[in-house]
Length: 501
Image (cartoon, rainbow, N blue to C red):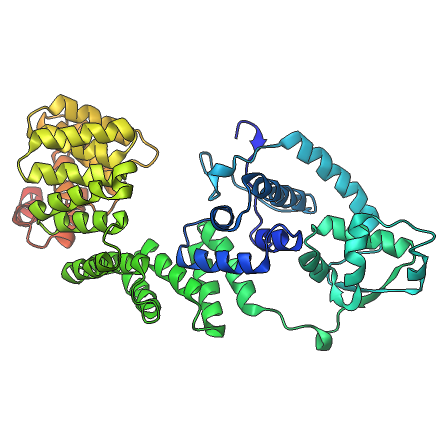
């Protein structure tokens, strides 16, 4: 960001922030366990922020250790001799933006180059992190002849002939380079000797569940949901009672449009945590996706019984009431939401987007416009607010103002397909065939399930250009989405006659 390093991670290297904080004596093991349990209940919360809010960790301490993690991820790249990459402009990390970590790229490059030079020496004595070292005959020199570094003092008691270098890294709270450098110095001084790689028969049992959860969390944060799902399922095979895995699998089901999968895991979670408001809210989303709106509303009612002022539940109720054609009840729900602590102090853009439509459905166009404009003052780049306010202005006959809002919406980083559809309709209405076709094509590219009307009009446009085959294909697609579309059926019945000699 601006030429500086703000975030870096390596997926197959576990996130050790919590363990490092414990090993360094910054937090207690009990605090870490409590924070991890809370994160399991609230997966969208960052572990570091929980430790700050609940366990006395300071922002400076967190920033220091996160900076070390980022540095180590960058240094890890220096050991790679081959590989490939792709560049994705505009991508933002799934990291705690409140940390404001900003590191010099030049500084990391210089330090990385220095480490490469040192590694060339270190690897002569420590060629692998799978090696086991043990205290040798030279240990007695400690007091009289050799002064140990702080890192060597920390590492020496752990070199017991059973721990690998990787184990020492984990248990010491030091980074890999510092551990390897310390061991190299101890070997050179005659303090320790290598026992070779740990024999399979003497290997300590790998904490499989923890490892699966670490990898799953890394995959999930990176958006690699299929890999994350596989790791969470593997963790559940070892421990079926893992609430954290159940929670994430439910979220993955929702994010990948598999509500039945989401429902399976959310319901399993609710068997032991029947009043979990977040789980109930997610269950309502899955039920809505399955078309079971009545059950979804009932689930939200149940969540509201457990937390009557939960702004997320109140907003979800209002939105679902609107979607099910109950605009009057939805308006009342939106008012309750705005009176809740969160809705009053920090209203969601979703509130403005849907409250606009609810007010319009109730015939309160001026109120709808007021809500929409108020929303855009807070969230000027919100595509849903831009589009829905445009719809209301169109209903009032203010098509130029509506079109301006739709154009703003399609210029956002995540344009809504409906914005292109609405622009296409305006162009279609004034006879701008080329403009209408361009917007319709963009709309269905963004959302192939957008609706039969878009495909119907696209078919008419290409048919008028003489492309009968393309028109038939578009109309067939419209019928797939809505078999009751009589206009499309008529068009299809006439096409063979119109194209016959």
